[in-house]
Image 1 (cartoon, rainbow, N blue to C red):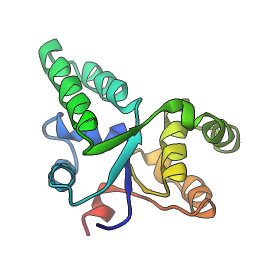
Image 2: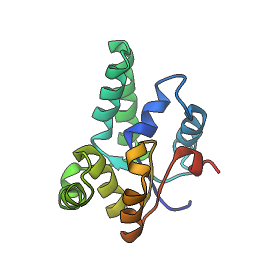
Image 3: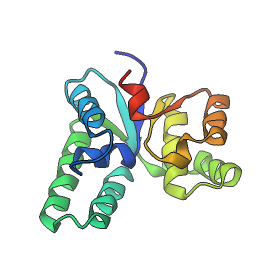
Length: 150
């Protein structure tokens, strides 16, 4: 198994939102995770962030509930390690101050840093040069789904 991959909600929401850009790459990554070919980590906030993304896209309540319980099961079975937010607070605070990111983005980046994992994201602000340079100084990479699938 290669290095660990840290996932944020912009990637995982594509597992449930049909017709998304890079959906195929996201589903391929999901399949690798469920086949235990990839070691994956995320923040425990991921579950709620995916719920938010689906609600914003006007998904039916039943589909949102189904996605939540699917992710809860995937993490409880250990396919994706869900890191408690409390373990990332100090690192995330520093990231928020330095990069002026939203708390959830700072927590995902902090999760990747403390896990020594490559962060996969589709968030344009997370893929900008300043954020990627910060991550590199912390010893990790930030990549898009397209880069991961190459």
